Length: 456
Image (tube, rainbow, N blue to C red; front, side, top):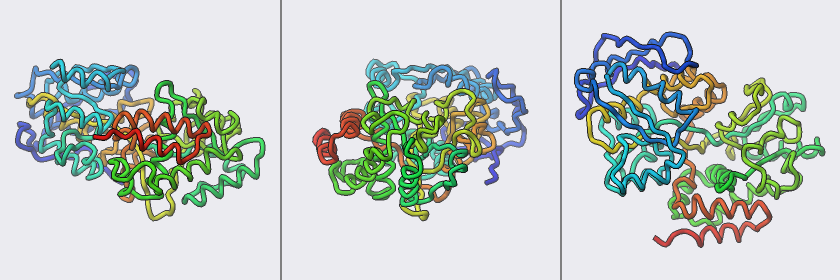
């Protein structure tokens, strides 16, 4: 898909001087030492035209994205800063999710916050401090992201936050070399996936078809929630998935029980897991970082995990379609549907000022998405922005993720547990999935989660 990242957009009321011009802004060198050396040919004129109004202003960012990932973010703002004269002050905090609501109470909110969960966005809107997105931002979202992403940045039908980065969770990691040597082909349907699983178990008694790890400190169990979400999205469809997230479909509904049973047919079968570690119950104590590593030792063939798992492979591992490891799309029940589970961040604003609106519009644009891709020289970042030129992403898995997100057939749904009340999504759903993989039965697991849902 050919993408023009020199596009120009019409101005919207409230963001001054976003007019069309033909004079290009002189682009400056990237301040990231690792940035690629090729010249930036993007036309930043629409941002440069705002300098007379914005020069000397500042915009503060608050986010959970910290060192070293913050370097490429800071570098990606350089053209905007040079063109507008706005200084962007960046603050990263590992305790962002806890501290942002507290800062709202104390009156110490930033101008802009990168919010990683729709539920937290709802919390911040409820404070009365969040500002609805400008028309310009809304137009960018409608043109370059679409209705699914707009929904996750909205509260009660009003858009508050444009999408920023994204990740794809619907991946299965494997070794292309091993598959080729064994004559295995990548499955395209769920039935093919299960047929392949059974064949691997029969062909190689010394290994297992699957490996997994739910361990993640105080967040142990989140991997299990992703499994259920991915499978439910495939077996019951996006409408039921949405109803389940909103608790209009209960946790112990037969459709959810069916999805959990399908997950159990893989993760709780000792013939199929846990390659390289032991019995299926070892999944509970295996860290998610270690979960897929037995693929490199021929002890495991497949590992369901998100695109960001690419950073967990040892240095020197070739992550490519012809490499040591690669990932294929977790197939749906048939080839006519392409559900995609994922996550991302959203740009919320808390100060009504031209420089804040302008910066939010920049972050929603393909100009920023492509600048960020170029600044992320080691890979590990992607956006669902359809104006992102996939060629600007340096990592093959990032490129594959972007293609999936831009696929018109893809139906994207945000991580379900991130949208549920924290007592469930970051509480009983995690803990009960951990109990489940240790041996607890399906009914008890789902009943316990259902009982924990807050009354109001």
